[in-house]
Image (cartoon, rainbow, N blue to C red; front, side, top):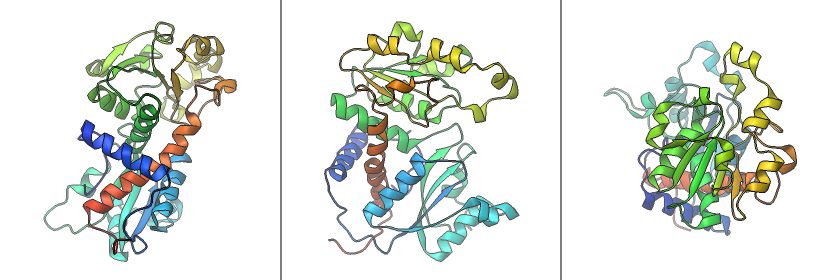
Length: 310
């Protein structure tokens, strides 16, 4: 694997292999080769807490050399293209770049090179616009697998701002491929008929008592138009589409609740439930480090980076 930009091409065998490798790291396992001379850079052009710091923690646990990059202090502000920024990194000896960008499929021109282009750097997608979020998707798969040990036959509900969520798009595709039954809920104006390929739309109150996994999605105010924001009510949303204490009480005994973060407390998730017994919000963040280690290692192996075997 030369790059890791989407979950589209992953099959069940590959997903389970990544889960097993992440579990190996979670249990204290170490990389099998010396990575101290492999340089990587994290280039986040959108705000991030979990993904950015999680990738950096994963890189440091693997023993990679991490270069700092601040978009606000870079030549991007002088009009430099993303490709030319990466070409600079490549020339300096950087071998891996984790990138988050507001443009959907920003990575395409970075990996589908022309005849005269020489860019030689592995791209790991930290999220592209409203497109894909492969690392969040895979850490979610790890979290679900830890609870149930399978995907086939599980009932999973994705609830909330579906249209704007790259997490929802990645997860619906992969969960469907792995044999889970996927449901959607939330405001109908954030639902797209294209999602019917992967699951069915139902009211939240119809779903809450029968699903194994309730995956709440952040309301993405930064991607909404002015009219949407003017009419949005936190209180109304929470009562109609959020996990209230009454809905929590109706969940199955072994059901889990997930959220990619950041949480709008008392909107998608009652604040008192964020760390409740069935919530996996903190576990997801912890699992993110180990899954991102597995993903980085996959690209490292594909590009034959690293020194002697330990």
